[in-house]
Length: 110
Image (cartoon, rainbow, N blue to C red; front, top):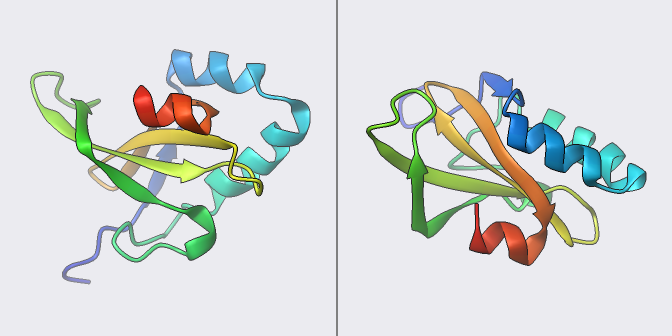
């Protein structure tokens, strides 16, 4: 499996993510749960097109595993209309979710 970056765990325990998720409309929450569940066993470098998964090339954020380090931040679309996104870091095989909300807001503040 050399060259693969496979998601083996999903962590949504982040308080900020939980708070923002509860603010999403119920229909978006349902779509978001489905989108997030599709991440398991996905190769970050070759994701399914419908997730619109990519790294934000000009952004780095604090690592969840070592706050002294900066890491890439990734986003996925949570809704079929592409109006809602979520951001996460990918560390040690785990997708650590950070925030969710409107597309443009997440791109500006992942």
